[in-house]
Length: 296
Image (cartoon, helix red, strand yellow):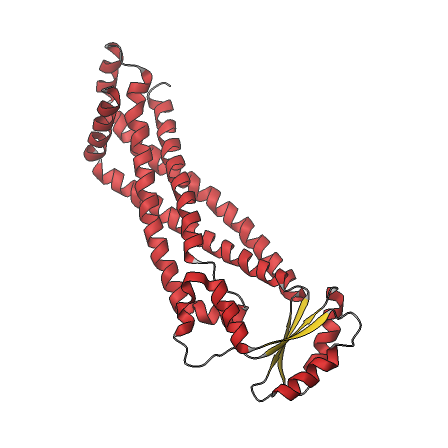
């Protein structure tokens, strides 16, 4: 029963003796995790935009000028109702559009309450079961009086898929390189500890210490370094993402017609990823060092 406590004591003793290298390792891993976190945020939000666009894949949204009254809106709707390939036509008021945005933003919807005026336009939604019909409807809508802008998803989806694929490929390559670097950093830190205790380790072997009794403190050291780095990275990313949403959330919603991924969802998932990566990096770095220097 005393072995775990002995291992913990030895682990913290090792960390204390090599504090400079330990801190350097933590900074290196934290920096790497922050870069990975930024890529994670970008990928998750691109996927969110893509999903939102695809949800509207069968819709043509016709944004109306503020000067358009109800009578003119009904006239515009009547232009599309009898058209072939149109499944339905409905009116979306700016108030309804704002409520939809607030639902998407969840807990972050407070940014909309700061607005003195609702900037969203009234719109007409034309449902098309076949996306091929959307282009003809969009061209007709653009020529109508009172129409400010027409949005439909075909081009956006194609571009987003291409962008998402390129970013994902680049992120995977960068992640692999950064993980390799972080493992080497932890490995070198543990190596210094092993070298400093080489004579002590030899004596421990002579007096009958088991391999895992010797390896345990080094493995725990790597895990602790990884866990602390993961915790620091999670806090920093959470603060950064909160500021990004506060500053750019409204502009992003108006530009992309969708919201950022909610803070709660992203941070929860990112913490899981960080903890898994931190423990894995620390463990792998320790195992590599022990295999080379402890004849495991």
